[in-house]
Image 1 (cartoon, rainbow, N blue to C red):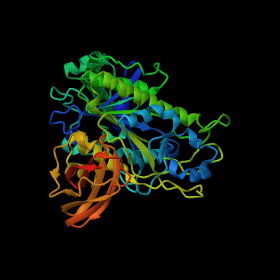
Image 2 (image 1 turned 120 degrees about the horizontal axis):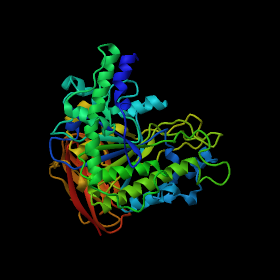
Image 3 (image 1 turned 180 degrees about the vertical axis):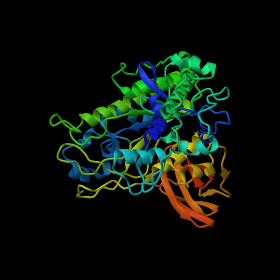
Image 4 (image 1 turned 120 degrees about the vertical axis):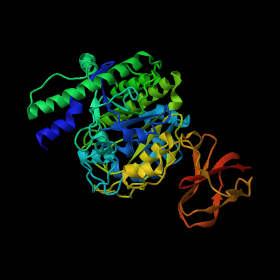
Length: 524
């Protein structure tokens, strides 16, 4: 990369950093395309919090396949948890004992798990894999622009001139504790901005920046100073919001003991303080556990990875408690991701090597609190190159959240990611922010009520395409999935097996493209 290109693309990160409660805070600049993505032209108070687990998280040590424990022990006997120490989420799936508070959140309907998230032909380089996740590209395609920034140059070639302004005084997205994300990289400049202190704020008010020499280096210096001056306005709005609210949860650890908790504490304060920022990005590093993932002595329930998982659980639980006490819990949904998972088989150094797909969490009062998808299938005798196969493309999670939480249209999502991806109901069916989808025509369930050991049939007129028929309990948990495949157009008569379910009322849902329907089914 040429020197000038380096300066242009990294000016945002070099511009300076503001501090709140001792934490560095960077802000992404206003983007018309990102505003459209989150439907910023309409009033919305929805917030999305993204937590990046840097280094490649070992999903098999976080979400454990209880139904395949013999294969798990055969593959990683030197690091695997004792089965009786695993905390149950379902009869088939468990969670690491360091994450007991997340087990409670799951049981209380505030945590969902998405199994085996990845993408086709995974890349095992930290840098390249992170680029793929932040740009939303295929693994065989390199996008030098982020999913938001790539649209900016054509729409606003003069950026950053003119922003922020009175209509858009707040940053649309904020990263805390890290440099500006690649997702806002534009064709010639990084559209993200790092917030500096307010020391040069009056330069922005005067409409100029300090003079620089009329040379190539001087032009670059002028550009950097312009970025710095603009970030001052974002700094003042962030500081004003922080001054309007105080954290209330006693569950946060002492400052400095858990960097993720420190970051989320600021997010809760800013959300409660009225900052109209839609997306927050936080991070926790240290997940590249090639060696000593567990201690050489003392058991496998402790060690480096257990400590990291405990920090996630502690931070997310305190954050959710704080949101509740601040009365903003229904406005916030969060998700985790890591650039890749780890191999099925452990290595001789008490660690794991770079792998493919891994589970992720979604959390908040509006999430669908279930385990999405079956446990990964483990070979009886895993080799050193065996990986977890992808079940869900990570872009399906992105697009599903954006569609349901921010009411982004399918056409916009297709433009943003290059094509459409299958929908995953990671948010509660009754708590989605989308406009009401078209009802599935003539959707009936018969017989209804149905005997506990009996069967019933879902009948409706299909338009053709991918169809899901699922049964949800009163908490919105998926308890049965009868259909998840492509069907032809025309009349459909789909069997729904209710055997083994406890008596009570359930919600039967049919989902087909942008059409959906729900009916109460009573099990006697």
